[in-house]
Length: 189
Image 1 (cartoon, rainbow, N blue to C red):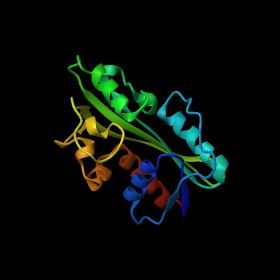
Image 2 (cartoon, rainbow, N blue to C red):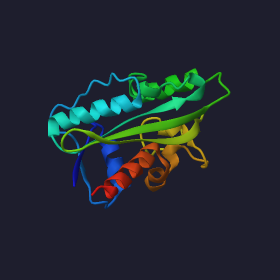
Image 3 (spheres, one colour):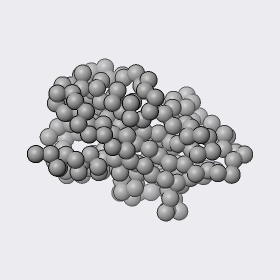
Image 4 (spheres, rainbow, N blue to C red):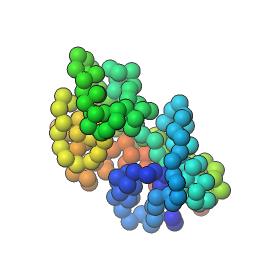
């Protein structure tokens, strides 16, 4: 089975392929000008927007995720705006660390909503995966991407960026959501 993974982020596609291993699904990026307007008011809405845009370009099964980092002391920010929180990834991290500099509560979670469309463009499954932890005061680790170097994973003494790819793919928000999608696909007739 081939599924278009609705992203322009090759890191996400690589992560999805790694999590799935030899599950029998071929994931590919959308062809053409994939540039959805993420104007939803939730991870769920943005996930549907991305999936529908990928379907418009491909007319086949599409899987989309919308994900972000939600920090409790910042009322869930950066949340939906995680990718647009500042101009560069370094600037995003610096802005977040600055905003937390006087906060005692550094608890946070990564959230990932995945939406699966069938080959008719209908939503057939949606799920949310979460990974809990806290924000450290300085970057640690070289693996992963995004906010991984400042996210201390609950139950580990490592940031997400210090985990090996195999470790990350067992506990990440994207892994939790994708495992739910795979279970759903395996249950289909």
